[in-house]
Length: 360
Image 1 (cartoon, rainbow, N blue to C red):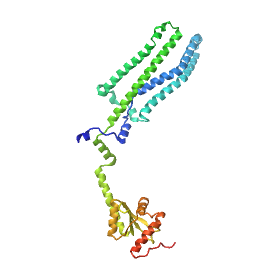
Image 2: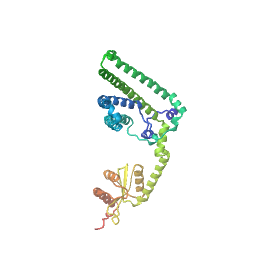
Image 3: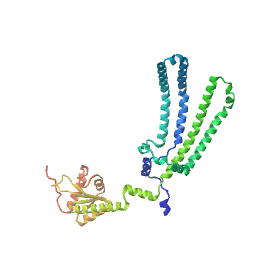
Image 4: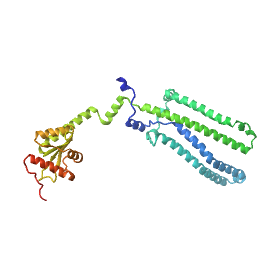
């Protein structure tokens, strides 16, 4: 029995999950964001990097060609520099936009939209060297360190493999003209970065899977925690049971006060009971005086017998009135004929005439 209360053998409840999310405890891999930024940066530079190089080369060419005139006219130099920076910034804008979108998507896909103002505030405890050492020397810190070393090894192996596959080109690179050498170096750098990015993405996905699993394990609950949560959300079960018992007793007492006024009780025959009252001098139509199911239905039938109120079994009518008519409300038009037939039968049993509603 103790392990039932001590072991976290139950999955987290929706309330526990939302509470953890509100506190910023979510499954998140920083490596996934880094890998996404690296891949996005490499791909976008492969497509838009040429424009940046052209702008930079054009600026340098103009500076060298007009070095003399620009040196003697500082205002022209300032104007030329600002113009070049403006063009360079416009060329850089799409790259920055793609990187921003990649970073945002890598976060949203992991944790969704989550804004935590409290996390923006500085946490002085993180500046404590002792707390930092505890984090580093903890089991999680050791695992992160080992994973970091493993990533470094993977990056080195991938980079070495890319260079090794182009070994002949690397060996003869010194024989290439300057322009071709520059293109070769750029090409091999992009290829290395691209394959390293893919490798880091795979490792980041594995890390995210581990973080997701660890997050689920941390959220698991004991039997006692589930009971405490239910008590906090709904109240003490014993108090709830007592409250419901009092409410049932109050309902029974109200039914006891009303039953002497009832003309007939329509039953289902044992599951439902509906007490009907009709006073043509005060009512335009018969009303449902009381109704109940289960224990309340038994109480209504028992009170009807005590007060001499006729009990008539009409299953469809009892179901209709119980489902559609509230207490102290008139019956619907579609049940007039059935209720009139029951009332006529009751008055016939009593040897009385069916009272008619007053003329309009």
